[in-house]
Amino acid sequence: MTDNLQERPASLARRPKPAPDETIDPVNYSQPPTASVSPPVGRNPSTAQPASSAKRKRELTFPFSTRLSAEVQELLDTAVDSEGITVRDAVEQAIRSRWGSKN
Image 1 (spheres, rainbow, N blue to C red):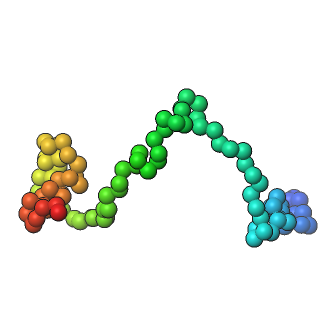
Image 2 (image 1 turned 90 degrees about the vertical axis):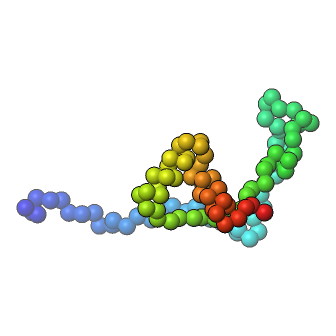
Image 3 (image 1 turned 90 degrees about the horizontal axis):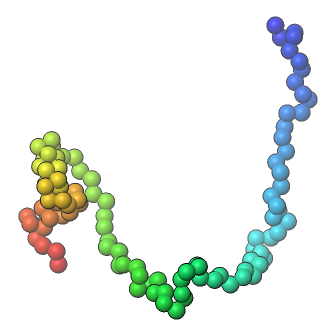
């Protein structure tokens, strides 16, 4: 069976191609100057709001995961569906009503 197969080539090793910037020292590398960026078409730079005023302050949140009984899961799902709130809102409201309010 193996007598009919052709012999493998003498060299199977492939040589990696050098990177285009192989000769450039990254420590001494400086970016070429770029052209100034113009505002997108249809926007007036004088009427654009500063980025800081457009961003909302992010609320600090923490991951929360727990196992629930089937009965409690059904109660939670019913509350979410009937009130039109998220699971997070339902859990936060339940905790605040039982142990305290938001400061």
